[in-house]
Length: 238
Length: 205
View 1 (tube, helix red, strand yellow):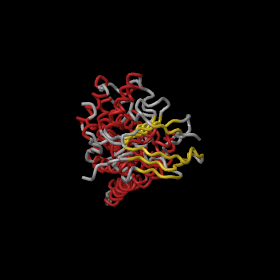
View 2 (view 1 turned 120 degrees about the vertical axis):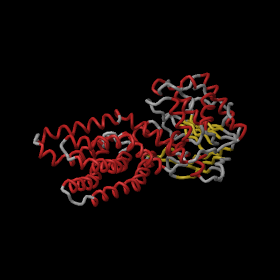
View 3 (view 1 turned 90 degrees about the horizontal axis):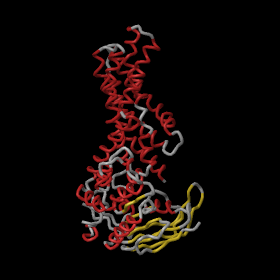
View 4 (view 1 turned 90 degrees about the vertical axis):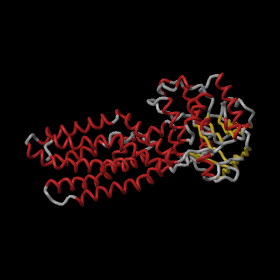
């Protein structure tokens, strides 16, 4: 039993790369689920921000209803920042990132799998909470499906753009704050596109252009973000 | 299926490494053949970890070259090398079973091989515990199980024995000896002598 490879000389056995990636996505989802209290904290923070709004804006239903969808959308961008800072930091600090980098799987795909796990564990629960928060603030029911769709696509963009910030701030003191400063300007376009689509639908105007731009931004983030993340990780490890 | 990652030789020729603008060492050469182990020694801060990370491709060389006996360096590092840093890379909140399963799969091993590695390192009673409940030595054994689960020729180890007790040092010495007998190579940074016959490369600043 002990050391079959010594007798067989079977060095270099390998599983298919897909098996490694699916194992990684499962690990990342589990880690993100537990990170910083997990989705409950994100959703709780989200609910908190949404509850503060009527207190600040005033309780008139009409005024609240006008901003409900936009508020739900901006609060979502902020809530998705919460668990980002530990995305690479923990693996960097405990040496796991070394082992993730030393693999036949390209580091770009590894970074993408980490962000995908982040989206599944943190972005998807927020997307479920977003329409609820908007409805509670008085948004019209017919807006709910679009809010959900925007939150899903936007969450994907937030996870992959956020990953760039998390990777760039590796090794920095107070990296979480640095991540937020790097990432918030990059959150501007998806917030504008999604908010535009929601406004247009609420006003009975064509909303597809804004939603298509949001989807395009998310697609670009998924395609290009991993390149930047991998470069930042290599730099941090060297 | 590409050819297996075979590393018949590890060659460092006149390598130099700088960290943060300060030159750690230069002109270090070493040739390690299959079946040989080398103990990397030297005072704290002399650059043993940096040298190991350079062999693994994580740190850039300032000068010199690292060869893997004709195998493409990128392939050799990705598929032919096991790196064990001074940290174990295990997550405190996950169970030993989850971590062993993940790192074995990540290294390309199947479940049966991970199981065999866990038996060899007597990890079974620990598998359902969270990593935070394990001692440093138990964590190290769990991390080293990866090396057995997915056989690769070159082991690059940073202080592999330091958290282990005397009995486990002896048993890991036995494991290393078998690895070498099977044509493996070991480069390990140590402060105490390796428990296998080995050459010594002493770094000095």
